Image 1: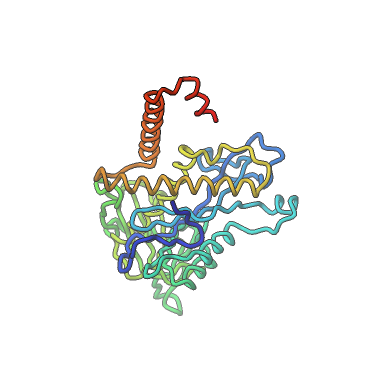
Image 2 (image 1 turned 90 degrees about the horizontal axis):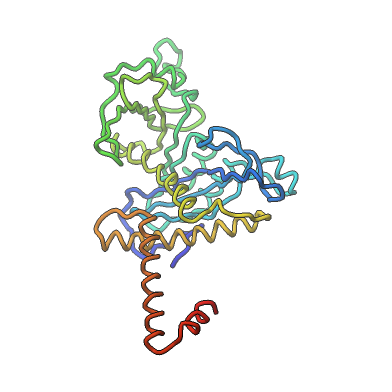
Length: 336
């Protein structure tokens, strides 16, 4: 079994296999409403409850290579007040994500593509990715501005808010496309090669679920992949969902939120052990997919391993019984 933190070293040669090689970053709030003496506690936004809750904030990187998922070192985000109380240096979420990008070492001959949500669409993060030679795609909020042609402006262009720009587009500016992870689902896409304010030159992607929907429901992304076509851009955007699935899996199957640890160091060690368990399950999941010739969930991999160990335990007990070991002796062996 391998663990994957700063450096990913797969055993296979992945030269010239660059598609879907993503470094995905995000954060997740782990509520601890009854926590009092735990280090690192703060009040963080919980997207499920749509409110701020008391707990820990996990900033995480997930590397995806050829369909396999490798969690990087977990990082605990502390708010400034918590850092002052605990006497540790403050690092913003932006700084933590930059650290993840700068310290990550991908396998040779692969092209890394960073995927982030709108919280991390900062120029400093884009610069960190560009400095490493990585591509980057991030979501954008509608209050960001894009450069558009403007004959009335002395320079021939002007900045326009995304919310205003999408309002100006006719329905004919959007093309129907199949969503990569569900080809039966169709979305409407508009792509503009331009610059987003406080970023760099990029491809702006606007997605609407239905043309009849209010334009306020449109979603925006920026990608540094200037050569990508619409299908490739949608593949990049949909790839970010992997980290959402990762957070759900590790909470449900590995219990990353089921701890009562007082120290921040103990908490990060606990998370690291969970990531090691995830890596083991992920490797077994990949093996099952090869054997069963279909997609296998992490839950199926866990249940399959439990089934294997239950059978081995029954076989071990049966073998001892056939050799004349008494039930009391078997019980003593099991509890030894």
